[in-house]
Image (cartoon, rainbow, N blue to C red; front, side, top):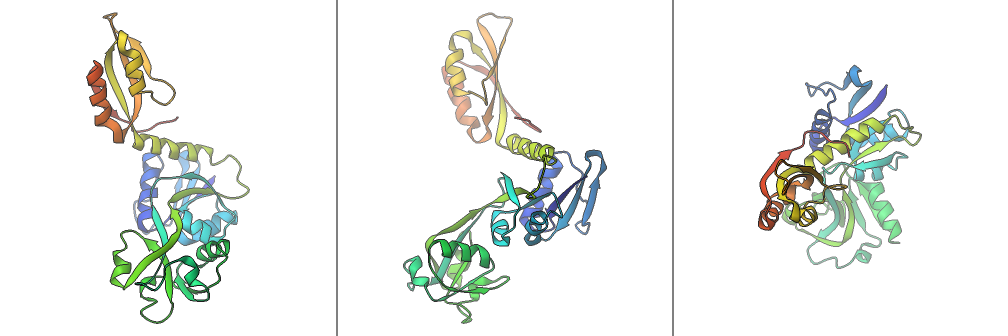
Length: 279
């Protein structure tokens, strides 16, 4: 039975559970449930602290896990990522008192507070900069104000929280993180079906199906607008001068593609959502 770790709370948890549900797996109904068995698919889910998942998977105690790239790297786990799941995006940056820091080298010899000490240490080691790391579990932005550190390394979205604490961002991006599907270092292909289903969910979210009628003389032009994944499907209609075309199109391009198709002569353009896919 495949053993899978799922975050038990937070944004990673909500999105991972939704993906599993869309992929047809049995998920927990009560947030207090820490273990769910899906006998139909020969899989069991363990709901764990997001920070611990990479450790369990890296040690081989669990086969697969959902976690952030930041947590994976900070854990120094031997687990390996097999897919970027497209949610839980975050950016890690350095920040310090306004006007104090101009470049990364200004940190040399100073104290840097962070909740991701190994991630930051490895980054600074690559940059050949030595600092004193101060590990905190949260509210890193107040470390400078309280005299615990000279600068911080933390997750940044809009930067408002840092500015409210009198800090400004400087230096390069430490990491662009997002949710990953990770597997144990000795993993076989037992996770292949789960991976395939997760990829199917991503495709279903990213693409829609375009169906439209097109004059046979314009098929090449229409196919250039909607090339699909491999190639569009072309089917004959009763009127020999027309064909039916079906292709996958990115959801973000729906209206632009409809405009292009209509402009070249396509008609009866219909768009359908995808509930599941295998590419």
